[in-house]
Length: 321
Image 1 (cartoon, helix red, strand yellow):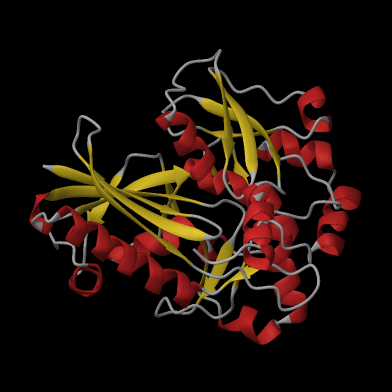
Image 2 (cartoon, rainbow, N blue to C red):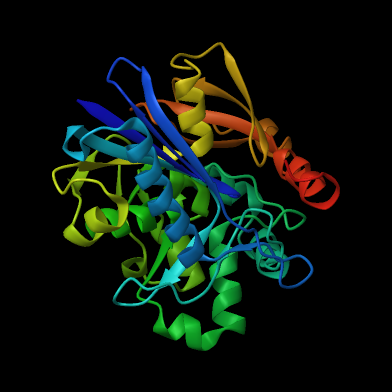
């Protein structure tokens, strides 16, 4: 029996096949472009990302020379703060605005001035500042104001975890950790915040079902099996925010030790055994969201210009190997 871990990040996708004991059997990596169509914009093309993802899965299977039916389950870790508007058939209607896409500064400022950053933090655990407009909710509002036809056609706003889950098994389910990054999730109640959605005039039916990390949501459908090389017998399990999953992989399972991860962004995080949303943490820019272990929370701060700067340097100055 094998398991497959899939990481869909800001600049690339990785597929790793391993045993239940953690022995790596094979892995594959694929890059995709981060598009900057205008100053301050930073987007991913969902079709490009999915094409790279399914090819990366297939390469990891071929590299490991294993029978796909031996892969019992897969789960996905994803970048946070990004969303995709999709139509009734699940087709993307617009490119995905990523963490560092800054176009929604005005909409973020509205929340600061009319709802209150402290109030947002008490509900969602997310520190709000218009100088770093990273969350999906203000970007959804930007879409409504500037791309009204796209907004009108949107059946659901999906983050990358639920989008990938939908592509794999037809069920757009998001875990609590990724939902926490949207600025719409009530971290204490473990549900979409009615107070915030009513203020935003956003219908909850436009958002996906939420479940704890590690929830079995279905098995691969026939189309996904053909595209990825996986078996229809493989179970799809909710994963989590990439930083939380990385911390778990680093052995952060109790409060005390911290993780310092350098991906597209650098993140330093610790586990909280109980939910703590202090004014000091908010003012210092520390976010709190659900961890990928039940009844644990993840407090972290991050530097948005980390690995992405190294990639920029490589692409602009380094010679190809």
